[in-house]
Image 1 (cartoon, rainbow, N blue to C red):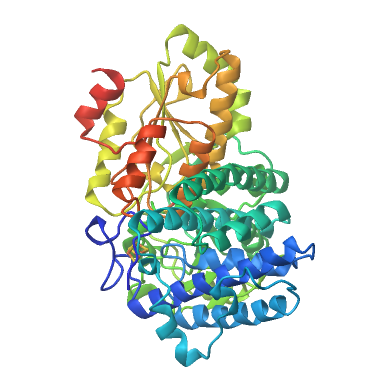
Image 2: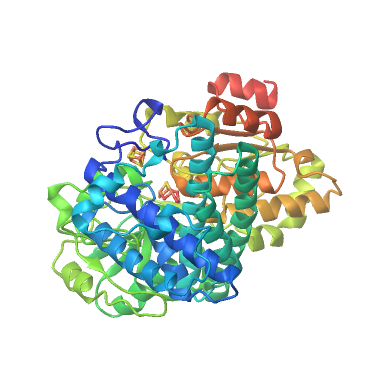
Length: 541
Ligand code: FS2
Ligand code: SF4
């Protein structure tokens, strides 16, 4: 196997024996093949569009789910991935039969094989099948960006928001990754174009979320546990949460959020559920301890799954693109109501969660809430009470080097405000960093996709202060990344013209030295140093 798509890749180079995330070589091989056949399906779909034929929405949804399935620690279930390969090949054959001009299609659009050939084929279509390291780097940068884009598009689709233009771009670009005639310059341009669509997809998801559930508002979320049995819901899918909350009403079972589901509490629509009691635990990587002490069933709606311990594996359920062998998967596509009755029954026979923390955390600072506070914020900036904003969005992870972000948050001058989104926040959202004239020093916009809100806020501030360039704002970008949704967020920020983003705790292994240089020269992308050095760099202190 060879995989280097996430920040935790072995030795900052690549996982070759097994994944640091727990992915085994046989699963890695099937993911490689799933990506390959999805590229083939995308090429056939793209050619059909070029011939002015329509592509069924179901095909685009299949492509989104396939990509999401291969995101870091989303799906470890080999059988489920194999069955997706079969379905994709079948769909591709159907599409191919309508394609008139097949001359320009890549080999992937024609390949088909029996299951016994899957492994052999997988060994020739993985990341290393592109020999030139710069072309490989750019192809993977684009592919990972598209995986993140697909995840967000899938969440929007679950709420009835689909944009055929975004799907067509995704499919066209995924097919282009196989196009040998594209030069490094062409691929660099395509990566930036992917970022533009990243902005669009995050806007689409923002619209889907806020139209369905209202605009996030300042909210205090309890982090202690109650005394009734509970279900813990993790991941990012708000539609799944809504269905679970509806089905758990009056059952005597409480619902808690975990990790990236925390921001659900900020939406007005979820506040009407009295059994939606709070958030349990921290970022994804602490789940081994926290799922054990939760005592009740856990529903993973997306990544990030850590291979479960036997002590709670029988309480782990998956849905959507997520999967783990031996753990029940709750089915349901766009527009369908999922049946969570098995999880609810399970919860009734479990002990209540053990409280592991006390108190509350505050969040809900997505764009509408921040813009409602705009006068207060502008006044604080003008008076000098707030001197800098520091965007610390992104992901958390298990590397000890990520303690940098806790130390960095603590070391910040008292007139700096952190803007955050994503699970990166768990490194500092319980530090009680105080407020500036009533404005909390940690403003949590929501999930990683709500980094869109941070961009909207920055663009608004640029307008209010009458600046020509977003980079003239007193904003520092110190972003933590882990998986491929962070890649689309990064490309989206680059497409908006944001410069000098610091990315840590390490730069992506998939950036070849030449591609990294291009990003440094054109966008000022850099890594992180020590907290002390970075304080001097950013604040001159
Ligand atoms: Fe965190 Fe994991 Fe949000 Fe990532 S919970 S690293 O999926 O997308 O962020
Ligand atoms: Fe390794 Fe990350 Fe790939 Fe898992 S997703 S195999 S940890 S590079």
